[in-house]
Length: 452
Image (cartoon, rainbow, N blue to C red):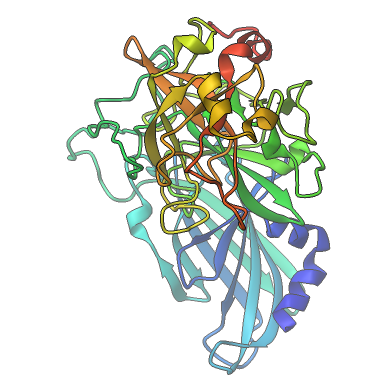
C-alpha cells in the first residue's frame, strides 16, 4: 500500500497512462517499460530494495542499455531517482525501496536493459542483449544524497565491449529494405520458407506480413480489437465497427494504436514489430453504425511512411473486375487471432483458413437473416462446416486472393450470424465480408502518392 501511495504522489497523470502498454524488462529487477503516448513515447519505471534494513544516505543507481545507433549522440537519455521509502518486501522484511524513472533517447527499436546495479548490488545482468543489431551501450549513473536532497546524473555511450568483428556476416531478417520497391503482396522468401497452409492451422511468422493488429483504450486499459491489412507504407484497411465501443460511441483516434508485424498477441514488442499511433482513423461516411451493414470499412493513416521488412509488407489492393461474379467459386485466404475450435476468444498466434466465395443468391437463400446484414458492397464466403472460417476477433482482417503471384486484398471480415444462445459466430453459416473493390477510390484518396 505504501508503494501504491508513492506512485500516486509521484504523478497522478503518469499513473493514469502507466496502465497503458507495459513490457517487463529484465525479470526480477522491478523495471517496466511503459508507453505513455505518441507525444511522450516510452518511459521506464522501476524499483529495487536495499540489502540492508537500515537507511542509507548515498544512493547510487547504474543502468546500462544496449541500443542501435543513435541519430543524436548528444541526447543519451535521463535517469532520475524519484523516491526512497521504507517498505515491506515480498518476504515481509522491512527494507528501504528506491523508485526511479528512465527517459529514453530512442523509441524504435527500444533499448534493451543489460545491467542494473544499485549501491554496488548487481540486481540485473543481461549481457546477451548486446547484439550486432544493438552494438552500442548507454551507461547511465544517478547519485542521490538523501541528506541534502541533491541529485547528479552522468551518462556515456560506448561501443559494444564484446568484439563481433570475427563473426560471420549475418542476414538480419527484420532489417529495413533499402527501399519500399519490393512490391505489394510478396512474402520475403529469402527468410520465410513455410508456404501458406489450410484448415485453420497456425501460420508461420512472416507468411502474412500485411496482417496488422488493432488495439484501443477503454477506461485506461488497452485491449485487442481487430485485425487489419497493411496496403501501403502509409495506409491500413480494417472494419469500421472496430472503432466503436459497446455503447456505440466512436473511439477517439488518440486512443487507437496499430501494431505492424505482430505475430504473438502476448508479445507486442517482439523484434520486428512496430507500434504506431495513427495520424487519423477514417470511417466510411456511409457506415451505418446502428445496424453495422453498409460500408463497414475504415482507413487508418499512419503519421509517417514505414519501411518494409521481412515481417512488415503490404498486400496489394484489388484492381481487377469489381463484380462479385468475378470471384464466386474462388478460394481465398483469411487470417487472424479470432476464436478457435477450443472456444478461446482470441488465439495467441494467428490462424488462417481457405474459404470459397458464394454468390449473393446462394447466401440469401441459405438464411433469411442475410437479407438484413448484406448489401451491394458486401459478399459472402465460407464452408458452413462449423469449424473453418473467421470468427469473433477476426473482424477487420483480410481475405486475400493470389493474383499473378501477388496476394491481393478483396475482402474485410465484417460480420456473421450468431450461434443460438451465445454471442459467438456461427460457422455453420456464411461470413459476410466488406467488398474492398467497391471502395478503392475512397481508400487511395488518403494517400496522394499511392501507386495503384
